[in-house]
Image 1 (cartoon, rainbow, N blue to C red):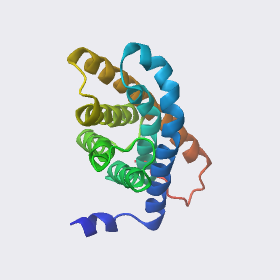
Image 2: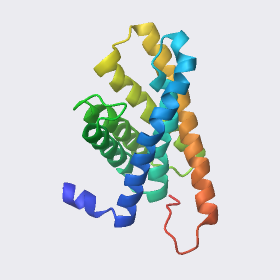
Image 3: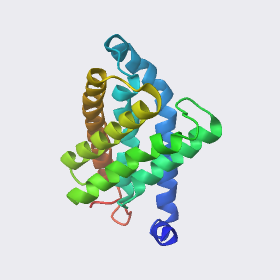
Image 4: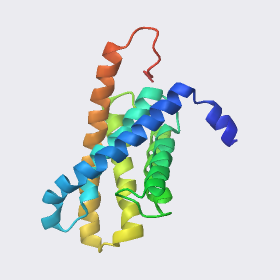
Length: 188
C-alpha cells in the first residue's frame, strides 16, 4: 500500500516535497525569534505565531503538486531533517510526531472538504489546520500549558496558520500565472 501511494509521486513531485521541507526548516530559525518579541509578554510559545509562516511551505507544496499526502510527506521529511541534523526545533524522536501531524491533519481536512489548495478559503483552512496541529503536538510533547494560555496559543496558531495558507495561495497564483501551458502545476 505504501509503495502504491509513493508510486503516485513523480521525481518532480518528490523534488518539490524536498524543497518545501527544506524551506520550512530554513525559515524557522529566522521567524521564531522575531515572533518571540510579540509572544513573549503574552506567555505563549512563539511557534504558535511563527508557525503559520513556516507551515505555509506545506500548503504551497500541496498546491504545486496537487497530490494528496504531499503535506504529510513534507512534514515527514522535515522531521527526518531535524532529527538527522539536530537543528533548531528538534524534539528528538518526538519530532516525527510534532512535524508530521500538521501535514496529516491538513491532508485529511482538505480531503474531507474535497479541496486541493484550489482557492483562498481552503488554503486558509489548510494552513490553519497545519499550525493548530503543530501547536497542539508541541504543547503535548514539550510545554503542557494550562487551559487559558493553551486556548490563546491555539487562537494565535489558527490565525497565523490561516494567514500562512493565504500567502501560500497567493504565491501559487503567481506561479500559475507564469507557467507555460505544458507545465504541470496543479489547478485542482
